Image (tube, rainbow over all chains, first blue to last red; front, side, top):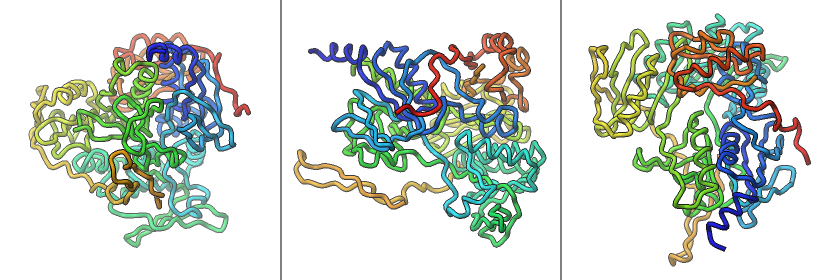
Length: 463
Length: 75
């Protein structure tokens, strides 16, 4: 049988398993059916209920406008799938092509998609994390609990971590006039994603809205009362603050543990795959039948020197899911690369913050148009003299212009495209906190001598 | 009904907030907040808002639960 016949047979009655039934998994399933896949489709997810949208959880849900169970994702089409929900996948057997579930069942497949995403990084001290009033925000149950706590009118909310989620939650609490302290280890909010210049602007914005912002400090202890309710937090500078709600917003952990013994190239940075979403094995060889999409995927981006990049962005999950689905049912010559320029948004303190490109891939940044003081501007990011990213504050209509600059490797700094050129349009160093990923130690060892024998073996990671 | 807005596409033209103000609201000058589950009584307004979006960023459910998974895992 020719390869084309095999592919037609697979499209007609093959078996696809999608592990991770959230945004990326759902959109991949819809795209597979759009592509004409008529075989058996199985959706595996650790959460009960239909796939739902997460960005509203720290915004509309927290304000109480939308109930936590009200963000179920609309469907683009019927996907005719078998849903196995409420039980996480526990292992992947590449020799026999089946997924193992935590309850012992095994689900066979011809091709599979990994879209297991990330989970919230918990507060590291378990006993403190278990105190009443301590929250993370990732699932709708998390959001429902925090919404109730915020609606009850706490005396003060402490938010640990001033990334995007932490800052959005601080914004909602201030809208409700609840006293808020934000503790951030870095010198300013958002600095890890957008650099020092935007970080300073974000800090000013938080303080202008009455946030007690404490940067450069670490929370050393969460203290509970006799009833097991959180009541106080202690900081590394010796100070303390009384708070009856604590939100741990320290980012995510990629859900790759279940793949630890799978023989795929997995680690804390995600599952490595090619630009067509095909997973790499431990040796760095591309696999044929395993695909990856969404927050858990880490793929090389040609626009950024082919560096492997993982993105926890809504649009990236959607785009990668569609690329993965297309490539799952296509011959090699018909496969598509995932080449879209990353985009991201955050709504906080009445400002629409959006980015295009990869702001961390930059050495300089310059405000190219608008007014920082009015919180309406665009900043362009450059690396070695070309535009690599842009961030807008209430100026989203201009981001397509900057996307084209990035796509065409336009010189940095770019000229101002409008009459509202800022007076001080001078590039400054972008200044990100140092790379933390370099400190995580070895993940593999290489054994064997002859080229035909040399193989990679995963090392157990001490986390 | 179910709604999701691709906010990476949204450019804050606010046509939706004008046409279906109970489901779409501006937060500040440009940021859009929306109800993910507007009441079915608003369906016509929401569909009009989705049709009017210059960026076609509003997705409304195309089917009515024909394919909804059961609440617990079958074994």
